[in-house]
Image (cartoon, rainbow, N blue to C red; front, side, top):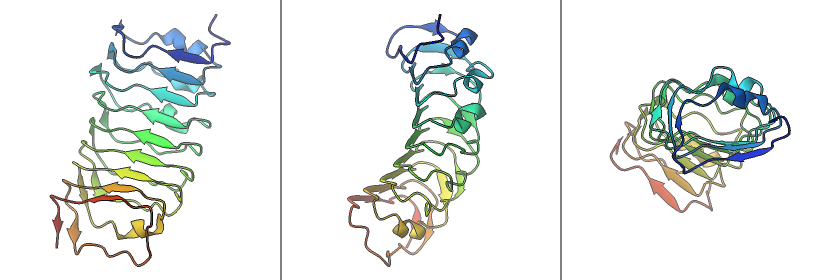
Length: 205
């Protein structure tokens, strides 16, 4: 009965319990919004393996969620928007094999490890990773020419952000409350769209 369903929006309700495994039978699903409910437990194992047509998945504000980010979600060929903010996810960010991804929000979780390479995200516009426990340096975004927003404050990132000068469409760079060091970057080429640069509470000089 779910085979031809393309859109399912259940956000901002009082649904509780676990996500039904049968949701994976909605193989034509393109948009799935489950945010701001009382779901508990992990997302079903293998759920996204059968949702190959998914374009948008919203699962933010699920405070009873447990477990790590679902690896299959980050390999979907058509996915454009992933929002998993404030949902108690732990562990590392999987490899990003999502060539159509434009918006990725994983803020306010308990994610650790490093930010994975962004080489395959050639049409990415927004990356929102603030309020986690991510470490390491800021990866290269040279292959992301459409990037407009980079929000990574309140992590444990180190190094500098000078390489971002190649991303000339950036409107906001927010890297406050990290462990960035060295001298403040002076971009060698103009970034005409840049309106916000926030790097307070680091170790810059």
